[in-house]
Length: 93
Image 1 (cartoon, rainbow, N blue to C red):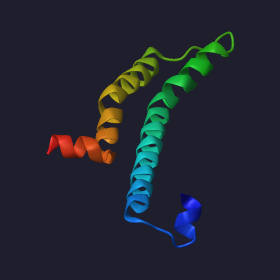
Image 2 (image 1 turned 45 degrees about the vertical axis):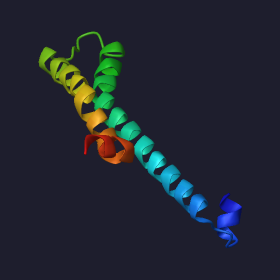
Image 3 (image 1 turned 180 degrees about the vertical axis):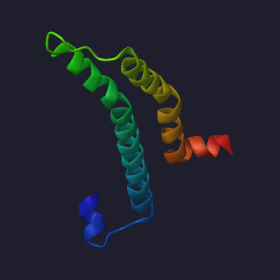
Image 4 (image 1 turned 60 degrees about the vertical axis):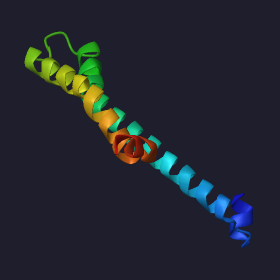
C-alpha cells in the first residue's frame, strides 16, 4: 500500500488506512514512553540497592517516592493513551 501511495495511486481508503495506522503508532509510542518514564526511577533505585556497597543504603523516603511515582502510572499512562486514541475520544464524547 505504501508503494501505491508513493507512486500516486492513492485512494481514499488507502489514505484513511495510513492515517489510522499513523495514529495507532503515535498512541503506542506515547504510551510506551510514559510507561518507561514512570518505571525508570524505581528501576534505578532497585539497581542501586542491589549493587550497593556494604555501608550504603537507600533512604526509605527515596524508595517510597519511587514506589509512589510508579503507582501513579496506573492513572496517567491510561490517560495518555485515551488522549491519543481517537476511538476512546469518540466514545467519551
